[in-house]
Structures are given as C-alpha cells and as structure tokens.
Image (cartoon, rainbow, N blue to C red; front, side):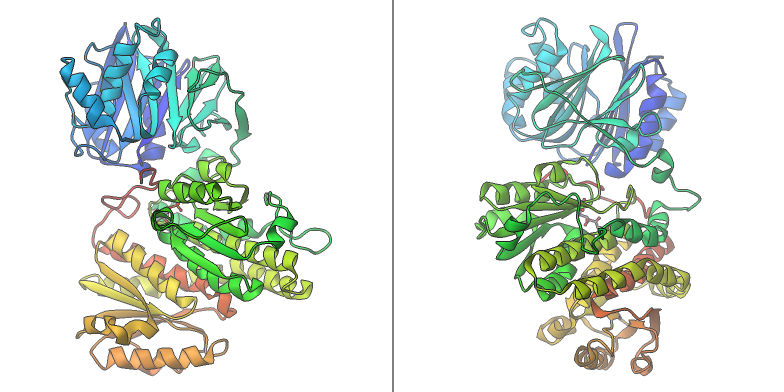
Amino acid sequence: MCGIVGYVGDKQALEVVVSGLRRLEYRGYDSAGVAVIADGRLDVRKKAGKLVNLETLLGADPLAESTTGIGHTRWATHGGPTDTNAHPHVSEDGTVAVIHNGIIENFAELREQLTADGVHLASDTDTEVVAHLLARTLPQAAGNLTEAMRLVCRELQGAFTLVAIMTEDPDLVVGARRNSPLVVGVGEGENFLASDVAAFVEHTRNALELGQDQIVTLTKDAVSIIDFDGHRVEPSPYSVDWDASAAEKGGYDLFMLKEIAEQPKAVADALRGRIGRDGRLQLDEMRLDDAALRSITKVIVVACGTASHAGMVAKYAVEHWTRIPVEVELASEFRYRDPIVGPSTLVIAISQSGETMDTLMALRHAAEQGAPTLAICNTVGSTIPREADAVLYTYAGPEIAVASTKAFLTQIIAAYLVGLYLAQVRGTMFADEIGRIMAELNDMPQKVDLVLDTVEPVRAIARELAGCSSVLFIGRHVGYPVALEGALKLKELAYMHAEGFAAGELKHGPIALIEEGVPVVVIVPSPRGRALLHDKLLSAIQEVRARGARIIAVAEEGDERITPFTDHVIRVPIVPTLMQPLVSTVPLQVFACEMATAKGHDVDQPRNLAKSVTVE
Ligand code: F6R
C-alpha cells in the first residue's frame, strides 16, 4: 500500500523525495504529494493520478527550496483518489504536515470529536485527523513533535505508519510505526525514512529496522528511537544487500519483463549455499531447533494470492517427502475460523513483501496459540520474518512489478527446502534421496532459462486471444495451483475473466462455462511421471474441445499425444513432476504480460492494485 518517504540532510529535499517516490510508486499510484518547510511555512503540492501528474504540477508550480521534506504515493482506503484526499495533510493552523500508510480504525470517532471542537476537516481521509491532533497536542508536549506523536499514537487504533514535519522545527522529521512498514536509512549528514529501502538505496545501504509501536526522530546528524511508552530503544542496524540498479528496469520496457527474465538467477540464488560440507542440507536462518521440528505433526501454510499458490504447490512435495499433513489456508480466512493450532503445528507464512497484513495477522494468531512459526520471505528485515520464530529468505532481489513472478518461483524453492529439511531431520528420506532432489532443484535455473529462450511463440498466442472475454485454466496435481496462478496473472494484468480449475472438477460445474471459441489453457502433466493423470487430462481436453473450446496446452517436450487435440502447444523442458510448476508457470506469466500489453494496459501498475497490501 502507500509509499512514504521522509528526508532531512543537505540535499534538495524535493529531489530526494520525488526520486524515492518514483521507486515506491509500485506500492500505490492513485495520487501523490510532497511537502517541504521553507521560510517558516509548509509548502505542499499534491495531485490525483500517477506520480507523473505531481511531477507535471511541480514543473508548472515549483516548490520552495528546502532540505527537509516528506512525500507520499497513495492507494486509497478512506476517501476517493482526489487532489484533496492526496497526502500530505496539513493541520488547520498550517504548522504540521503528515503522511500515512494504513488505516486508523477509530478515525470516525476522532473526526467527530474534532468537528465538535470546531475543526474544519478538508478531506475524507482518516489521515487528516492526525495532522489536526498533532497540532493540538503540541502545546501539551512542550512543542516537541516526537512527544506529540507519541501522545497521539496512543489514541490511535489500527495500523499506521505516520511521518510528520512541522514549521517550528524545520530540521526534524518524525515517524511512527504500528503494524505497517517503515525503515530508516542512515546516511552521512543526511537521514531517510521510507516504507521500503528502495526509496533511499541510491543514497545509502545502511538501514535501521523499526519495531512495533516505535517512534523515530531524524535530524540530519542523528536518529533516535523511542517506544510508545517513551522508553529509548536501541536500533537494529542492517545493510541492504542490493544496489539501486537492482530496482531499475535495466534496459527492459517493463519491470515485469525484467523480473520474468531474472528468474533463472533468482532460483539459483534461492538455492545457493544450502548444502553444508557434510553434504547435508543446512538452512542457516532456520532458527527452530531440530527437536522442535521432530515434534511437528501438522504444517499449515498461510499466505495470500500468488504466495498461497506457491504454498499449494509445496503441499504436494512436502507431504510426499515428510508424510506430515500440510494445509494451505488463505491468510485472510485463517484466524477467523478458530483453526486447530498448537505447539506441534508448524505454521509457515509465505510472503514476498513480508508486510501483507492478512498474513501477518495469521502469523500472530498462530504464535498466540503456541505454534512455532516460520516465514518464507523475500524482503530482508520486514515485519513477517522479524516476528516469526524462523525465516528462510528467498533472495529473489527486489520485485517491483505489482504482479508477482520471480517471487513465486523462489517461494516454491524455499518451501521445498523446508520440506527437505523436515524430511532430513525426521528421517523420512535418506540422504541420497535428498541429494537427488537437490540436484534436480539445482538443474532448474538452466531449465527456466530454456523456457525463456523458447517462449516467443507465447506472445503471438496472447495477441491472438487478446479479444476474448474469458480464459479458463485447468490442471491437475501440481498443475492445479499453476492453473490458479495463470488465471490470477491474467485477471490482474489483462482485467479479464479468468478462472483456474482442477481439471477433475470440470464435470462438476465449470464445464458449463465452455462455449464456442473459449480458450482453455491446459497444464499437461508429464506422460512419463504421471501417466494416469496425463490420460485423464487428455479426456478433459476432449470434453471441452467437443464443446467448442480452443485448447492451448502447456506440455513437455516430446509429448506428442496431445498435439492432435490442441490449437496451440507451448513446450516446456522435461523435468521431474514436482519441478514442473517451476517451468510451466513461466509461459503463463509471459502470456498475461503480453495480453495486457496488447490491450494497452499498464502492466507494472495494474488498476486498483498495489504491490504490498498492508491493510486487512
Ligand atoms: C499477484 C500478487 C499478489 C501477492 C499477494 C501476497 O501477482 O502479487 O497476489 O502474491 O498480495 O503478497 P506477499 O507475497 O507480499 O505477501
């Protein structure tokens, strides 16, 4: 959700803030705004629409020069995406400006109190109440913005990151964090606040994690942190292990295209260094001891969207290798159904961003029930891995396009590593079996590379089908979550009706959707690995084809039996069954990307979506 940047230093704040916003725009892009302090007053510009609209406004109506500033890109929650509702919001007396990410749940009550006190609220947002509250609390806080922020935060309910500046102290930026991301960038004679390190990584790779319910105060030379009770907190420093170029398009037209192309490297990085000198699998970040892992009787994976599809793929492998039952649950449903969770249930949260609120809340619920928790995450230092008992990072590098690609493949790899590790610890597989599967996994970067080399025809198919109103995806076994993932990519990028089904379910309802010309993408299992399923899928193809469907098969090299029954065949290399999702998903990513491009959509920033969903 919303992107936040704060800066204090020697540079022109506007330039730093706007370039930070450019890197954060994937978090929300329905309006943007900036504020600086110059000559004892706040200078604010904000504009509905993408960042470029704000930049155009700034070109026509430049902001005053200043070395302290804040900026925001918004994903609307309270109030539509208008100029007025864009952040920053300013207190009625014009002394305090605030930006915010999250939802202030008791805002209606606070708004009512302010209105009763005669305050005029200019916007429909929950954020604006904070600007007024801060200004009204400052006298009680002896004019200290940090203290005012602390007092106000104690009155707020919900999830929020807040960053504020005030005219009385122009060299100060104050931030607060509850359940919403905020990181500090520590520079030389300059400091930064942002929802994501991407905003400041071109200036510094030294970062500080902020914990729950903490307030941070920045001047150009100092960073200090307190908690909501006013106690000093020692910061936890870390170093960002990628540079600014990793968050740039690097010659590609789209971040999504770049990230699809990066998948062989991402998979290799996710696998790197996992085998110790003794030939055994070692997961350094796995902070759960082996005894605890031996006592596990059930695994529950909680995740959202694409990450949940990775969990579904992993279920097939982990159950097979460990003989432990694995449930995969949408994180948003988990804590509301009184799940059966206890000390012998390992709860695995999968999240690219590490900030998805539904997943975080599911993880917390599991921890409250006494379950050991493990995060599979891409973003180092984010909330979910910090709160989990153990973490396995996916090392895919920054994923900027809203539609997840390389994160998905690496989430599968990481979940497989956890499965193999459990099998090793529990003795359900021999060392040589684990070694064989690790060798298969280590082949995957090259196999994914092969897919990328041969994926060009997929673009032509996508363009041919761009006029269709609906596309169905079917698969079986590990091909089923791949079908779901293919459909999700098409929905979010091409804005069209797309559904994924388990092929065996067709006859139980979905086949009624088939009419003349409907494209059906079929994820075909290997005829060698899963001969029975291959036969059954051939029958499913016949059934939908008999009713007029156009068949696009994703099938392995050499599978000629399907050819007579298809309109198009997308070939993928021969790999073991459990590895198939790693190759068969890639053409579906390209398919969705190309179809969205053909329809003229913004692929990297699809409508209504944001990269990191930090509200429930
Ligand atoms: C789809 C997509 C989303 C995310 C979901 C979870 O392309 O990107 O479905 O997978 O919002 O996000 P993370 O993994 O950050 O928890």
